Image (cartoon, rainbow, N blue to C red; front, side, top):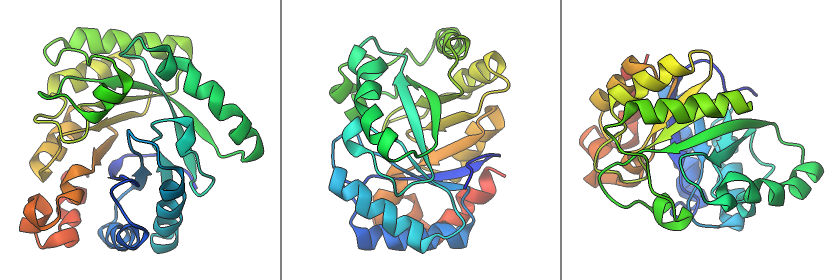
Length: 245
């Protein structure tokens, strides 16, 4: 099953989500018409990743499930695609190439399709989990040309996609200016944008600026206290789907 085109992706953290909760999210995502489901966490949790991936697949048939891994320990064959992420905004070799080498034995035994993805962390106004775990600084939010240069360099190396992320729970999402600059720099590469997107209006702004895939996650985890709670729970996913059409 392919993850192509454009639309809304829902990111599920296997460390914070049980199999039963993942099943509920999968059913709601299917009903709302999301384009795909992502599984990912900054912390290792191999057993949970496998369980959550299987629950999403079983309860959202016809919707591609992709892995957004924080390390090689999170690999599972219960997904349709692995975003083979290289943290090109940082300079920590572990997340530039080392985790990828560690992933090779698993992928040789379980040949899940991969998408070489340049992962670019943008300052979202607070220290996020990915910044703490990777020990890398995000790129400044007010330097779109710097983000665009990283995206261009990554595609020149041969990476197939670009993922701009403000980080889980960011105070502010990646700005339209940064998205537009990266879209112009890599017009033919799939562009993912996530982090801090808590309302349909913010999702719409990211899509309008050039994101192919708009990713939400924290707003789903917040439950009744978050934006989806105000919209009747997971049934409110439909408003986000409509916003990015």
